[in-house]
Length: 326
Ligand SMILES: [Zn+2]
Image (cartoon, rainbow, N blue to C red; front, side, top):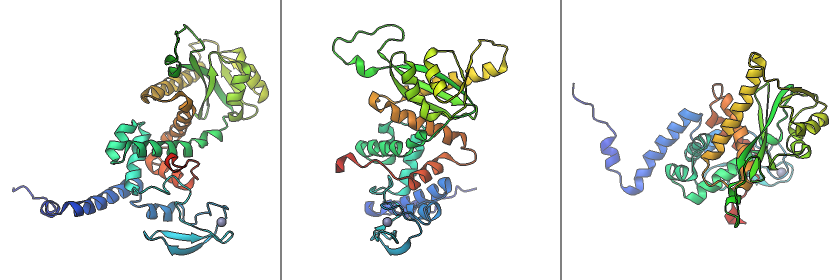
């Protein structure tokens, strides 16, 4: 049987450089639609945000107004009279790149791709990729702030090298849980919801553990832990119950709980180490992203993660504004 010629080969080869982008963008939009449900910002906005709130006064139920020069639906706020589109106030607002490019970028972020790789694959500059990543992390990282663990909760501390200190003149590494190590308080509840909060340098005091975790744990929680005394103020503050681990390897509950916390610490460590050149002052932002992704990935079967992240980005006000415009 003769090999079938690709009917588009001649057409695509015959295009000028100026026209070549046109079929590619149609193909990208179609592929994006198959992967995340929509191929354009406008298609996604109609489905995910059919009645966008006013980004200035938060009034809902607004009126359809004219369109922007690019054909995007404009809305007129019934309360304050200002106009907006579904993208106003989101990370997408000032972006010149299309929805499939963002979908691609978000997918790479879900795999914790390095900035250079994401910039290369998405065809944007390093600076743009850097700003997009920061915008996404800052917008969705707020998710952890509202997280309250409950029922049964395992808590522990993990330590990471403070790489910033290594560049300080006269730095000499010390052994053990020294002040060269950044402490991260980690917790995970029986519903498999994690929390990870930077808790200063070196072994933490009770106050530091309390400051890190108190806002993230519901009242009356039962804590399973290694009986570290620094956990006690936290447990008292939320009127919790303390159960110390007994290192009983025949107890399935003990093994299960230990495994959950140990795995969480190992995953977080691997995640942090994957980001080459991460600035330590940004560590909490990365941990917030980790916690967000942990939840999104758990629901991946029911709801593919890239689509879910894109939808959250469209529905959430971006707190971040481009550093170049300030
Ligand atoms: Zn308004």
